Image 1: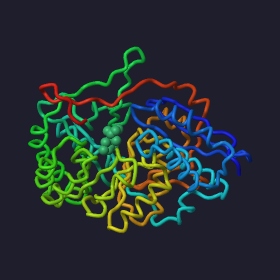
Image 2: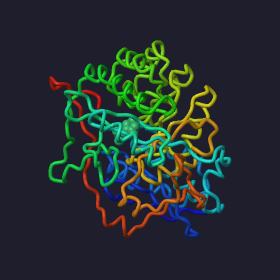
Image 3: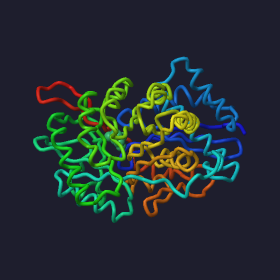
Image 4: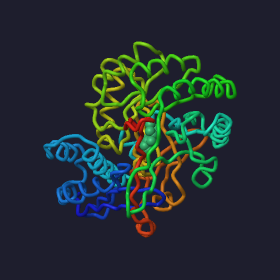
Length: 413
Ligand SMILES: O=C(O)[C@@H](O)[C@H](O)[C@H](O)CO
Ligand SMILES: [Mg+2]
């Protein structure tokens, strides 16, 4: 089954998405997500200029061989742009294989290990009362696990906190990429103070546990801002509140940092949303320095690569906790859900609902019921792209913010 076309669609229904569509000689099509938040057009160009021409004439069934051909064949390996492009090809080929077989992709991966994937939503508030309202709203929406992010006294705008109680439309979550206007694209800047954060967070979790009791799984994202010893202190301070995980406590490229945190705290640790290869994890897995693997299918080379990564994690008893904010497109989200169902070592799935405009462009068959996500039974990944709707939302430059300390020093955001 030869590949006859590979087209890249860039669309911005509320936020930017890059999608690869592969077409075969018998008219089957497959979709892959290649969205890299804030650097979208770099992946678009890599796919259009360097990958699409190599796909024409290849066998669409040869998923593993195509992965190896694009990964090893480029000579320059890994990196977020390359691996998002390889991921999109891989997802699209799994989508085609599922459609050819008349089966959802999770069946091709070995079949379902569970009835659905436990999802966590993003509760946040500028202060504690607003945060408690947000948690209540998530519980009313059916979530059975919530991420807790809070404003910090003295800081104007803090990662993970919805700008207003109304949020975007009727949602009450958090989309950090800001549209900048084409004339002068620049990220917004925020100010950060780790000591203020470390003082405040235990009072936040005290209030949440006091209000909602011991049962509800609570997560928190440190978003790369602490040193190892600061993260160790936060992990210890939060032990009484029994977190499901503390995410991205330190910048991810320093695997040894997790060893220091681990020596001091039993708070479970998750990391990996900015990783793009199993090689970013080898020390973390072999030394059991983390409890959850945060990789997205979109940023870590696709279903083929993430399956291998999760199988390696399983050897060490480490579970999945795949990335799922709105910068993962519905195609990338569907790919994650098929894996969530099929791997034995599933832990939890991040889930931020996409905006209505996004769901008009991407028609999904996945569903969220009683706190669990399910990819649905449509053959392939179960997502279709409406070209007419996509064309109504042209690309708009948008960036994630940049962080500075109060003296102006650039800090991890
Ligand atoms: O855990 C999360 O969902 C966040 O860290 C986002 O991925 C990040 O802010 C980029 O959108
Ligand atoms: Mg995160």
